[in-house]
Length: 118
Image (cartoon, rainbow, N blue to C red; front, side, top):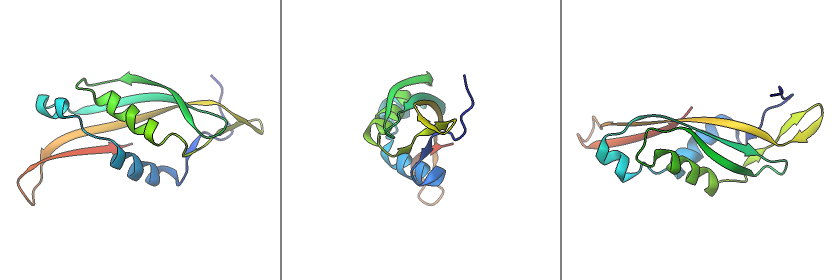
């Protein structure tokens, strides 16, 4: 492992990543029915051209949660600024944690699913 001079960055930075990806990520029905919550960690590479590839689920809670995150990244694969190492644009591995939570909406009393990119 090497330390990059600049790690890969999402276009629009972390707040835009959180907004875009939370919108694209679906909380799988299977996971909702099983009441599955928790953190999912995925890894992927940000390539020299700013696209992403080689997705892997590092930590999963089951119920297709990991696949839901990977599907969202695949749908938005070209929104990255690549990493830099010693002045050169390089392909770099990136890890992303996503929290899935279930609860009750206090305003409506209905079930609510929340997805947050951390």
